Image (tube, rainbow, N blue to C red):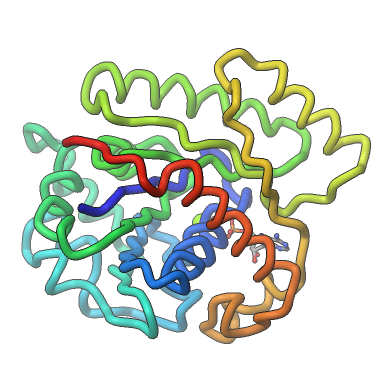
Length: 258
Ligand SMILES: Nc1ncnc2c1ncn2[C@@H]1O[C@H](COP(=O)(O)OP(=O)(O)O)[C@@H](O)[C@H]1O
Ligand SMILES: [Mg+2]
C-alpha cells in the first residue's frame, strides 16, 4: 500500500517542486515504486522532466474523464501524472461537486496497491487542489526557505492542515519541515531554525537533513533531468539522498491504516 505524501507550502519558491522531483527520484533510486503527481497549473514539475502540453494529465483525472493509471507516464524509474496549463478550468469544473475535497483520495485509491510512495507537488495556495492532496495524504512535508516572512505561510498551512485532519482526514500527519535552498550558519538561518525549535506545534518536526543552495538543483530541470541524472555527485544529489534516508528511517516502515 502506498504512503501518500503531499509537498506543500502556502508560499511560492520555497523548493516544493524541486523537493517533489528529487525526493521522489531518491526514493525511486532505492527501488521504491514511486508515482509523482503535478497539482500545479504552472506545471513546473511536468516541465522539469521536459514534458510540454501533455495529452494525459491530472485535469482529466480530477473530472473523471481518465483514470490515474491511464494518465501516468512511465519515466526512467518512476511514474508521473503531468499537469496542464488550464488545470484551473478543471478545478472550476469540480468546484461545486459534492465531496469535491475527496476526489484525489478516491482516484488514488485505485492505484495505491501499485506503488510504495505517491508524492504530490502542490500549488502555492490552499485552494481545492491542495486540500484534495491533504485529504488523500498520510503525510505532508513543508519545504521552507530561511527568509523574511517564511512563518506567515507556515501558520496558514498549520491551521489549514489541522482543519483537514479534524474534518476530513484523521490520518494526516506533518512529517516535518524541510529547510530547502538553505545556507547554514548565517545569522538569518540560525534565527529561523531557533524559531522553529521554539514552536510547540513543531516539536520534533524539523528534519535534521537540509537541502543546501546548489546550482545543479537549479540547472537540472532545464535539461529535463533529476539532480541524480544531471549531477549525481553534486551537493544537491547528496542532500536529497540524505533527506530520503531520514524520511525512510522515520516513516518508512510505519503502517498506516486507511
Ligand atoms: N537547493 C536549491 N538550490 C538552488 N536553487 C534551488 C534550490 N531549490 C530550488 N531551487 C530553485 O529555486 C526556484 C524555486 O524552487 P521550486 O522548487 O520551483 O519552488 P516552489 O515549487 O516551492 O515554487 C527554482 O528556480 C529552483 O530551481
Ligand atoms: Mg512549484
